[in-house]
Image 1 (tube, rainbow, N blue to C red):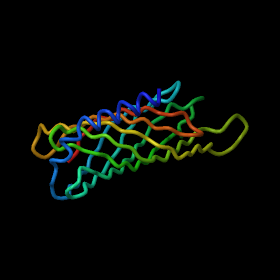
Image 2 (spheres, rainbow, N blue to C red; image 1 turned 90 degrees about the horizontal axis):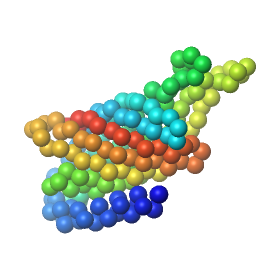
Image 3 (cartoon, rainbow, N blue to C red; image 1 turned 90 degrees about the vertical axis):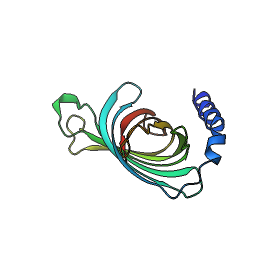
Length: 169
């Protein structure tokens, strides 16, 4: 499954290669916010996030920093569950079509309730890799809606598929 996903993303990026060459813009700077659904193996979480993107002048490359805050379900009526992910991606973007594809690294953290008879939170942390595919729609003059699919691989945590929609400046 991973090879198929990677193959599709690489093929998609190569199909957009001619539009990447046409981009010779000044440096771009983007800020935005998004809602998300993050699904693990058996469960999923809703959340909110923020992002920043900095384009490299005369290249179709953008550096993206993404912060996702998730609201996981808490077992046994516990109310202190929380989770967040920090992501740093390098993406190839096409100014003509609005599509972007790339990858990078991510850091996952989740605070869970303790097992029966134990005190304190159980903290789960892990570093991973991710692939991203998205599109920005230039429908409005200043604010642009976008959609994104991101797949995150981790060693100690279930891999996650993250679907995000939001607005970016």
